[in-house]
Image (cartoon, rainbow, N blue to C red; front, top):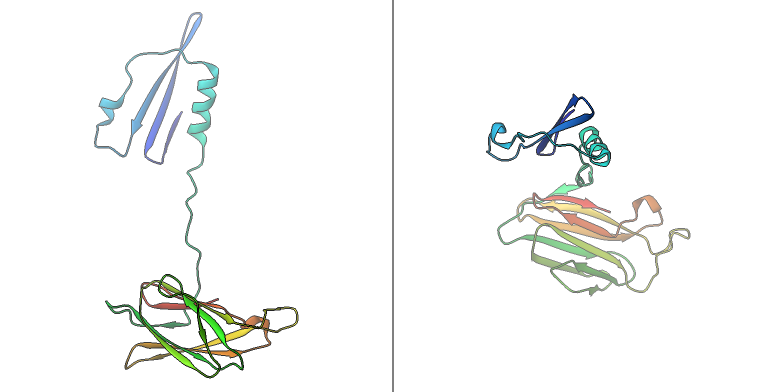
Length: 187
């Protein structure tokens, strides 16, 4: 049997002699610079059935699964990322105060009705969360839902995020993420 994968290889060779069965096991570490010849086992060793069963499972096992970052789809906008960070202008066009926070950069803050705030030098990647301060979100009733409209000022590189009320569940968002490359996604 032979199995390559991960960064090693196991070879088991069966040798039958009268009244005895021997198995030769060769384990080769493919991730090192050692030559295959120096890794070989040169003596014959009797192995128990449990060891053979384990080797058989290892030899036929699938390669391990690796976690992959979820696909975020097509970005809603792309902003320039400067050495000093990202600048976001948040505008509240609702009839109630909203709470917002740039995770890792600010503490939760309030933004009054029809007010705006400019957040400068936010580290990228960054996530901005926002929600009504006093109106609980009820998706069944369609209350407390917000939508975000994005615009990038090409001259200054500032991302304008305009928050408006909505009753449409499919338009409701409360998070905005700017990746290291400047791609902007809303959730």
